[in-house]
Amino acid sequence: MTQEHFDRTIDRDQRIEPRDWMPDAYRTTMVRQIAQHAHSEIIGMQPEGEWITRAPSLRRKAILLAKVQDEAGHGLYLYSAAETLGADRTGLTEKLISGRQKYSSIFNYPTLSFADVGVIGWLVDGAAICNQVPLCRSSYGPYARAMIRICKEESFHQRQGYELLMALMRGTDAQREMVQDSVNRWWWPSLMMFGPPDADSTHTAQSMAWKIKRHTNDELRQRFVDMTVPQAEALGVTLPDPDLRWNADRGHHDFGEIDWSELKRVISGDGPCNAERIDVRRTAHEDGAWVREAAAAHAAKQTAAPSSKQIAERAERRP
Ligand code: FAQ
Image 1 (cartoon, rainbow, N blue to C red):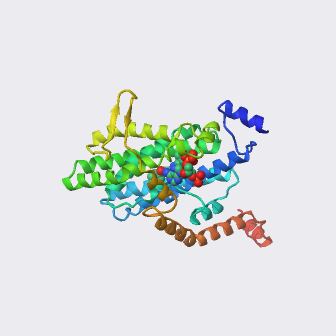
Image 2: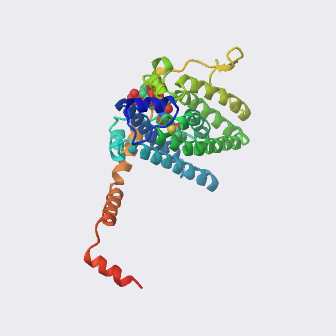
Image 3: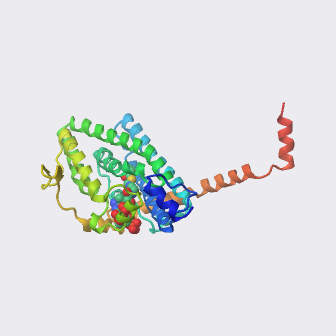
C-alpha cells in the first residue's frame, strides 16, 4: 500500500479509504477542507438560528428549527469524516475558536430581516449545492459518502427558502421590498462562497489532480449564476449587478467584477460578524463542557469491568 497504489486508485476513479496509504499532503488537504466545511455548517447555524424565536408563525418556526438542526447534523457527519483521518473533534473545535482554522466567509454577514432566512435558503444553500454535488464524487470515501446525504438535505433547504420568498413576493409591497433588500445584500457574498478566482486559488490545481475537487472555483461560480438568473426572474427580484447579461457566444451569463478585497477582509477575520460568530461558538463550547464530561464518564462506566456488587445485583434481577 504505497504511492503506486494511491496513484492507481485515483487514476481509476476509485475511493481512498481511511486505512489506505496516502501522501501526507493529501491527508493534510482533506483534513483542512473537511474541517473548514464542518466548521461552516456549525457556525452557519447562527445567522438563521437568530430568527427561530422571531419566526412569524408556528409553521415557519418548525421549518426553521428543522433546517438549523440539519446543519448541526451535517457538521457532525463531517467531523466524523475528519476523525477517520486522525483529526479529533476536540482539536478541530479548539482550532476554530482560536482562529487557526477557517469557515465559510458567508456566515460573517448579519441577518437583518426574516427575508434573509428565505434568501439564505435560496442563494446560500443553492451555492452550497452547486459546490457540493460534485464533492459526492470526491476521491476520499468518507467525505464523498457524507456529501450524498448532505446534498439531499441542502436541496430541500433551498426549496424551502424559495418557497418562503414566493410567499413574501405574493404579499405586500413592504414584503417585496424586504426580499429585494435581502437579495441586494446576499448576492455578492454568495458568489464569494466559491472562493478566490482560479488564478489566485492556492489549492485548486493539486486538489483537482487528486480528484478531491472536480471543478474549479470559477466553473462552479458560473454554474451557480446560470442556475440562479432564471430563478430570480421567476421570483420577480432583480440581481444587483448591472453587468449581468446572457452571452450567447459563451452560452453563459456574463457578470460584473467581484470585490475580491472584501472576500480577503472577511476571510482574514474582519467581516461584519466574525468576532461575534466565534464568541458565540466559544461560549457554547465552554457551556457544554459539563455535557462532554458527563458523556465521557458514562462511556467509561459502560466499558469498565463490572464490580462484584454490580455482578451480584444483576444476578438478583435475573428471573
Ligand atoms: N470562505 O485555494 P482555495 C454551507 C480559503 S457550507 C472562507 O480556492 P480550496 C451549508 C481557502 O480555505 C459552506 N475561506 O481553497 C450551509 C484557502 O485558505 P487556506 C462551506 C475561503 O479549498 C448553508 C484560501 O481561501 N462549504 O454553506 C473561502 O481549494 C446554509 C484559498 O482558496 C464548503 O466548505 C470562503 N468562501 O477551495 C450551512 C465546501 N474560499 O485553507 C448553513 C467544501 C476560499 O489555505 C446554512 N469546500 N477560502 O487557509 C470547498 O469546496 C473548498 O474548500 C472551497 C475553497 C471552494 C471553499
